[in-house]
Length: 167
Image (cartoon, rainbow, N blue to C red; front, top):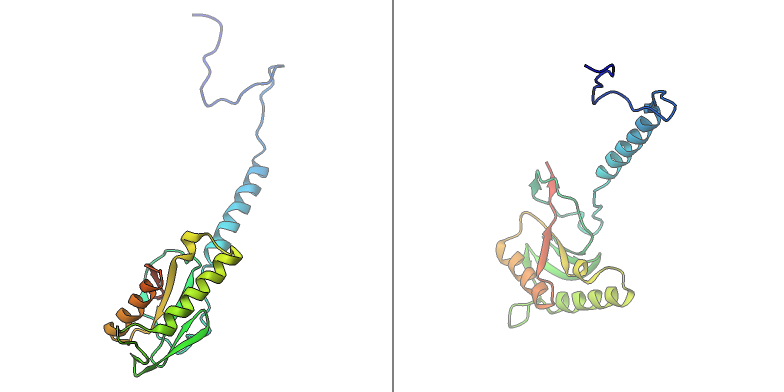
């Protein structure tokens, strides 16, 4: 057997002079702590403040998905909003002002206008601009939700995200 000692693969490396090199763990721990802090801070900041839909009672959910910005359509029991702009009235949860094809013309016009304004400003990518954040009162009848969604689809918005309150 030769005079060389067998080295463990976990033994520290040596520099050219044969002295063992040391890793400064304090700096690595500082970096790791900062990364963890910013991850935790950004995770907790995924909330949405609803100003126009203050009377809306959202359904509850345990989902952990993050919120992405999109055009918001809020429908309460008495009023409907697009981006905090009132666009229609409801009578006890039923839409008022539907046309003969059972679509809501003012909602459709407003959505088309908001879409055109955002695309003109290049505020968002086109894919993100195609999504409706649908804020609907949990007491609404399905027919009302269906009419609003079909009107949004007629205006060119076929993708929806539903706002819910966290349990």
